[in-house]
Amino acid sequence: MKIGIFGAGHMGSAMIKGWIRSGEIAPPDIFVQGGKRGTAQSLQQDLHFTLSNNMTDFKNTDIIFLAVGTPVILPILTDLYTELAGKVIPIISVSAGVSVKAMQEITGDTYPIAQAIPNTPVQINEGMTGIVYPDNLSEEHKNLMTTSLELLGELVEITEDKIGIFGTLAGCGPAFVDVFMESLADGAVLNGMDRDMAYHVAAKMVSSSANLLLKSKKHPGELKDGVTSPGGTTIKGITALEKEGFRYATINAIDTIMKS
Ligand SMILES: NC(=O)c1ccc[n+]([C@@H]2O[C@H](COP(=O)([O-])OP(=O)(O)OC[C@H]3O[C@@H](n4cnc5c(N)ncnc54)[C@H](OP(=O)(O)O)[C@@H]3O)[C@@H](O)[C@H]2O)c1
Image (cartoon, rainbow, N blue to C red; front, side, top):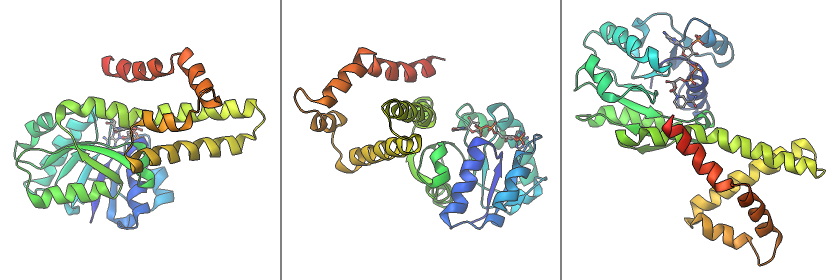
């Protein structure tokens, strides 16, 4: 599969790294066009993808991604659609801010163009990506969309009205967990643990707890109950967290983003 992508910033580079890491896409089969700051050029030195400075290269790809800032999506799509000159190549935008309908105002409402929200763990093929498929999508084009994104981790279909909350939970969530892991490690360092060991233990504990939740399919409260013995240390720690409004702070973080 030949993949074209506009934008090699935080999200574009994470996706490129994931495709290369998957072993299924050869670096030269990824055609990348970057912006004025030269981010794509710098990354190319390490990743050896094909750097493109024209739209024509994209006519030879099987699928094209738009991983640029929201204000640039529609201008690039307009130029790209003109360059494709009737050739139909599926396109996926990863911007939360531009709907399928807005993009189809440029391409027409039968063009295979989707909106997807990946998150940064795509770079290690453990992403959680939501996708809004357009109506009237052929099986062939849907397969290209799903195959290219499933190389980066799990893919779920979502409806357009859920794209905001999906992006907040899956896209912003990694930063919340990063702050949580850093804080856990700070608490451990405060109590004498070596810094590197503290980060490693915190990260492994978070990832294994998440895996237990996914694999056991138990309610998180049930898993918590299994760690909290009566009068024990864990329930004392949870009480300290709740005294500081841990649950409210977390719920409010999601809600604040949704209301912003
Ligand atoms: N970051 C996330 O976790 C995340 C999650 C889900 C979705 N997204 C979406 O992904 C998109 C990109 O976000 P980001 O965080 O990766 O932003 P970013 O780090 O600022 O990257 C945007 C990239 O677009 C490039 N660019 C600008 N104009 C261009 C053009 N005309 N042609 C080609 N490339 C161009 C820039 O290149 P130069 O640096 O060379 O100028 C820059 O590297 C946004 O729409 C965002 O909503 C991001």
